[in-house]
Image (cartoon, rainbow, N blue to C red; front, side, top):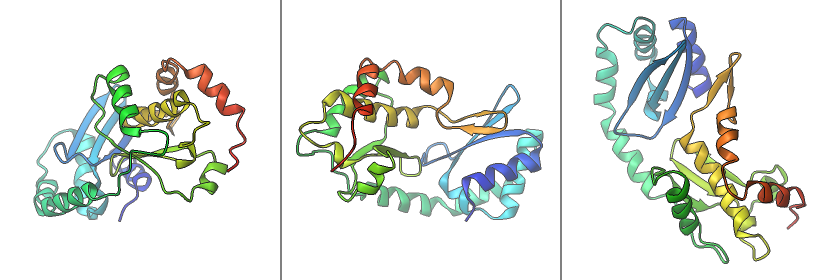
Length: 220
């Protein structure tokens, strides 16, 4: 199985172009290749991580020339339709828990989606596993997985003394990750790009949330 970074590096090397690769779980658009200035933006379904060398070489050739037939890619897609459907079924069976003891993530997500994103965010959201002390020490209060399009929030935040505006800020931050593509600067990927940071500051309680976080020791 290819990794995202390995595949991105390979496509750049073989095509001679600067490539920004995004792995998705979108079964409607399995492969999208667009050129913006000198950057080729490639969005592909996770199944291509299992593609053989011939398929990837054909993809790199198409990125390089933007013309020619792609029989191997089309064949690979046809043969993997079953895998896509099976993964979608498994995704629907993932353990999702939105109602906490003090905070309801679904209500927070829906409110933010309407207020800031025009309702376009389709990610699932859930409280994470209860055993999260190590993650908190590493400052992981939330995460977004593009493979399953799922946001998970650390359950340490589901406490009476944690203000709702701070949980909303963490959820908003992860929703941005599902909405804003990674950028490349000087050949390096930037998860928190200048665009991301600018959008992050649009959250109405941004300053208050950042200040509250700095004052916490995150002790359980």
